[in-house]
Image 1 (spheres, rainbow, N blue to C red):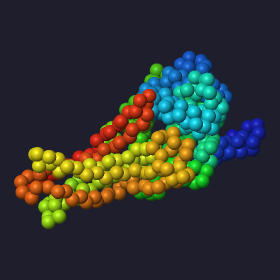
Image 2: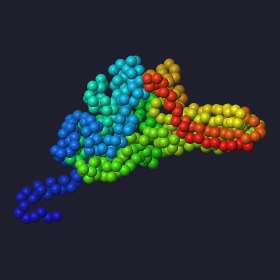
Image 3: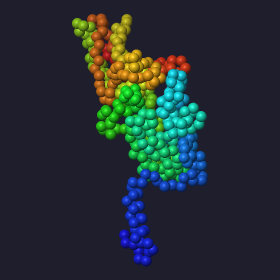
Image 4: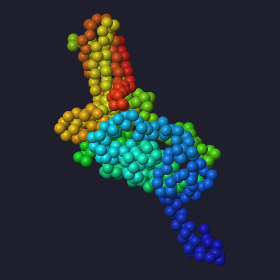
Length: 392
């Protein structure tokens, strides 16, 4: 386009326009009029600190409702965490606070509120923490996140704008690295206590570009912003993270491949497969396990055998650790790890002493087993898969 004749400062205007066209695709922040009057909660958005999730929920109501039902929302109030946290603080005091709260109340890494005096800190893994993260440092476990609290909120939306705050596109928020800052805990000695992110990174899902968010934050019906505030997309990424029984059950498959009599007895071959999880099963704390139980019954009696899949963490003296807080505070070595990797199938063989004639029933059940302390011990068992077969 040619500049119009007699325009003042035509060269300057030309270069300003050209520069704007060149830079615009790379601009991270979409300029808006922050804290615009009439927008619910706009005046309560902190210009240089963290903002309560309740304020976010006044405009982002569908996303807020989804988050409120998540483990992130109760990361600090979950009774299982509360007991482990109290045990850890009793053992290590302030050191335990810094270790546990950097993920269960991650705002503490910025506001240093380790005594949990501020209401916003007690919101756990809240909206404003995740949406102000600018970088993740997996090689810096003591402070894995760089954050910029304030008016700018970051997400994977490329053309977003807001009448209440500034917005920025963030490629990081669509990657598993964002999750890896917490869901990977490696000690100073290099021992992986929790390795969910690494399990994904070294597996087939990472090779195919399938991120944590693709499974745990699927798109669903909902509005990014309430329609009376602003027109927006009509689908949202669910923020409840889908850590539920149904997802656990869909992760494992159990099949009885063979069940037949032989001179040795009743020989049973069972396949257990991690068919739907991008990380090992079970993942997270080493106090969790998968138990494969095979039972044979003839109508009069039932016999069973088991296989256990878990990571066994020990202290520096080689003593296996069975409590969550001990694993985090004292974990020094991995004694064994036979958990099932992404898309991995295991074939397990069993021999039972069974009647040589008549019908027997064979069943194979995989269960998720976790026995944390919650004021008093809670034994959690979730049946993940089952198969049965009659043998004549």
